[in-house]
Length: 361
Image 1 (cartoon, rainbow, N blue to C red):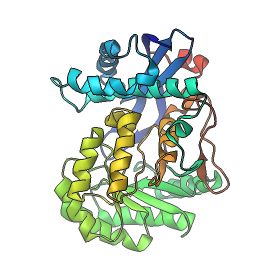
Image 2 (image 1 turned 90 degrees about the vertical axis):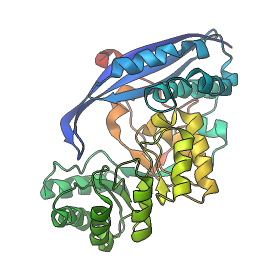
Image 3 (image 1 turned 135 degrees about the vertical axis):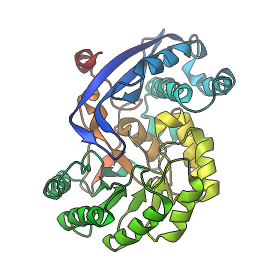
């Protein structure tokens, strides 16, 4: 089997109502859908995205520029793509759009190999489990009132989630604690609760807020300071009993290694796009295991679920529903609130052609 074409389609998925995060308003996500076609009729699928459509054209062009790495390739030799990409991308660098574009191609390669073998990617790697703990991340935003937070939180529990994440901002820490306390009161003591500061605090403010939040028994306190301040993250990690989670903004497994060496977080949560694809995500997972550190995911639940199922140190899958319209179906939760790994080959979920046409930019 040989890869005969790399094809991309840009789609725009509206987010309504817009999400008001501590960083910016999120009104849509634009995805570059990556298709690798073969001479045997199999087509591998992957995707990368850009918030609010910003620079999605640049991302699409970068994906297309990588076509020479895969055209004519036997997908079972997909590991050679990364090996050659490190040389090919050396001049432009190993962070940002270069690596993120590579992620879409790498996802499609893994999908092809799974389809060719008739196995879900998790089984292709060697699955550890058939389901993964999951938390609801598509709600509980800063823009919600306390009453709305409590309604949303109760709804997540009613839908079967056993953990969820809310957000805090950089100002008025007492008010932020009151918002988190309201969510805890709505869901009770047995449901996991994460808090995300979206990199908006100083080290001292993060330690102060973290200590104020500790009586609420949080699962973790996420990204309290700017992503590149690993020494600041380490200081917060050392100061608080609540676990610190971070890592969604670093690139490749080397970025994860730097965080582990700096002891900057108790839980690493790489993003499969910023890693450069599943190949690098799995390397990050192995590094975390070597450092006795749990690993969670950021976004891309449809891709991250089979990968986490193959990692012994997997902790939580982030369930963000942004890409669900493309698949026409949702990830299934079992009776324990875990996300069930699909049994189909490749990623187990396929893009719905009608949805792709509907959202095509």
